[in-house]
Picture 1 (cartoon, rainbow, N blue to C red):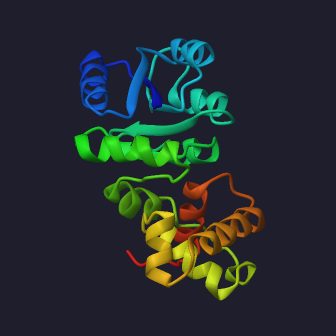
Picture 2: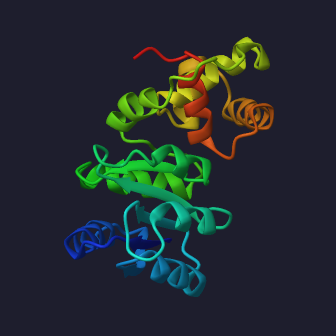
Length: 208
């Protein structure tokens, strides 16, 4: 059973997310709270597998909560996208995925399951638009840090594919994909798949 904490200052959002998630036989919502301070308290009490965090909340915002929770809890940041130009900071603070509030029930459930399994899910529109928006550095990262095969794997991560999908796409075993990803995280000094995806966009590995 995947345990989930929901933190959002809009009650309708919390109620809606809870209803969607609790219809699933493998997901339980252990708490839903309206602010960042309550989110940290609830996380310490319930030790959830996944936390769904809004970025803009009273008290502690989602960025600070992400930093506090990410070492022990998988964090999926829920954003309105157009207003939230803080997503890059959330990524650096250890967020495992990004979801737009209008993503729909199926994607919400998929994001929770992916995070719990260690596979970050990023809303397609966030992948294409948000990562691209933040991928305009004065100098691109050095592609020579990675082998050609590692670059192939990184490219597929940035497109939002799961480990199994990457294995099928590149005709690799699942264990080989995991080995490549572990090597990539070490070489790039990033915390998770979202960091890998961001690096891929900044390096120009993914076409818009």
